[in-house]
Image 1 (cartoon, rainbow, N blue to C red):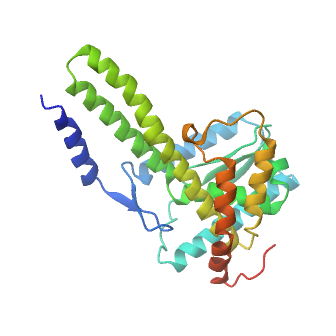
Image 2 (tube, rainbow, N blue to C red; image 1 turned 90 degrees about the vertical axis):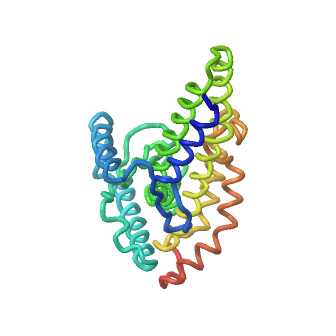
Length: 271
């Protein structure tokens, strides 16, 4: 069997499958699974998570999380409508919850389901800090990063399967499998994840500014995040996220662009 054939067939299949366009970058993105099938599953998982965790309600902080979330997602919709994407958010179901947990983290599921852990509030420090985190998480949903991660995993699995079919020698197959995991992780999946985080930072900065929050707070948040870290972070090339220094630098460079974008919507001063 021709060893190259399975890889060629997969490449052709990838090209034949429809892609989606990221409205914020104008770039084509992988979309091997539709949001129509992905969102309902994500919503169910989110509801199950809330049932199994201590959700904080009717406090100043929980109300702030929801207030900032609604303001950020409304700004995103305003931006999308102004740029010709009127129906982009029709299947999204935004929800913002604060969970009682010391973890310094927040996350967003496909379709707009967001969780803040109470442990991150001290790092956020103020509403602009919350807006920085919220903008980042909303941006993950807007850019369909969950959809893209699943699509990338399908490609990785398909290539691994093709390699195992193409290689007949057991010893060579073993070497391939060991090498494939390392190469596709360090050379593919990890950089892919870091690019998503950087993209979410950039889009989030823009959206928080359109919402009227001060984008200058974003690098300050990451300076606080850097100071809060316990132990040594892994080298950037072995991490799913850019280093704190990289994020601080990129966000600082993006402040004026975000302010210029906000000015198009009449926002000239910030909270």
